[in-house]
Length: 139
Image (cartoon, rainbow, N blue to C red; front, side, top):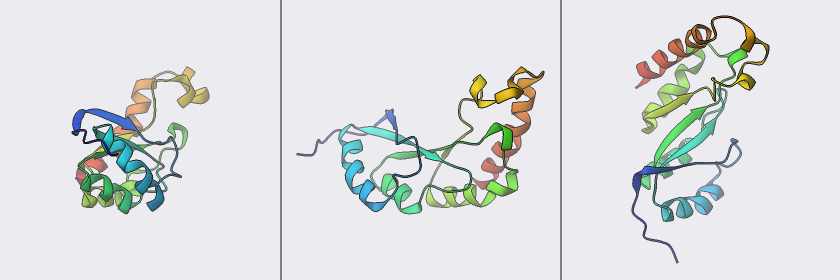
């Protein structure tokens, strides 16, 4: 019996912490469960080299669930903004409004040896600002 829970934009969930659960079968399995919980948004793991598939994103949108793309970008090998332009444009064209860049940049594990160097915040912003501007340009 499927719950008739209303969507609550204050309630959201993180989907699997990998990009291996975006097939049609996963949509069929998990979308009813996510809807039953009344989640208004769902954070989706994404790598810079591989978009979350369009059908998965569109299924969420059709169900009234806001996808939040969480791009796990490595700080020691951050891509140039032009390398993510097509991804940002595709997500915007599909209806995605929110993209999170990087994963826990305020933790030592995200930086490796670079953590101990001076100017950590400035170095992070040197990576973040150009990518954020590219995402904004894409819509």
